[in-house]
Length: 346
Image (cartoon, rainbow, N blue to C red; front, side, top):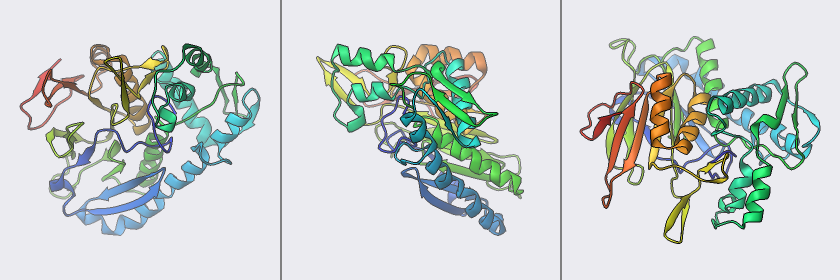
């Protein structure tokens, strides 16, 4: 697991919801499959009835990847890598691919995203839903077990090695996005060009239009919800040929000496991080969106805005208002929030 607590380390249904708008979904086809402790849902235009079989076939990637990537599957590639820490382990090409993507994203975020950060989650007690201030010695030991640079991937030979014996991997902050990309790739290869796929309403990928016959250039409208009250709509986001993901502390936090500690951990410091209620972004793939939403939440609002503006990543930061249940929506990186009166441009 990276920085988010999850019962299943490949998904989290506690993150603030991003949901397809009712007007968009009303007359569309929907196919779903349960995997990674969440529902993977493919939404197709009304005219795409003959493509339903392609959606069913594409969704098979979700349970297939769960068998490879879940630490709750004793025979999965990730479980075997963890058991053989310190030695090379033979794995599938899909596992090599997602681990290489994780390394690229860790490097891109200066380590704010790290798939080896699970020991820190456990040290703070979030792994067993009993959060607590950790003993300094326990936290120090956990910190020494973290380090994305120590994951060695030899894709040519199909082998992976953890350089330190006390290390372990968890793909909770990237695995679901990787699955969404693979499902999307399968649909595109089958000639399906208009669809939206989401996994648990926290990460999604969308291509084409929900109405390709009448509005071929329109994207898929997604509702951005209040992180603490999902019945409140803050605005709409249009997604087309890109991915969107949301990250935030959700319901996992505790108070110690008057300070709130959330379950999103900065792997570089070993301490809870983030000064936002939630963060949503758009980028080129669900794999990147899943990981970057976590990393940018970790580094905080100001640094996240700088990152988004530098790399032209549409970003929506939801910041709490003092002594009020309302939130401010701050947009950056060229983001556009549709039909809202509370957004300010950064």
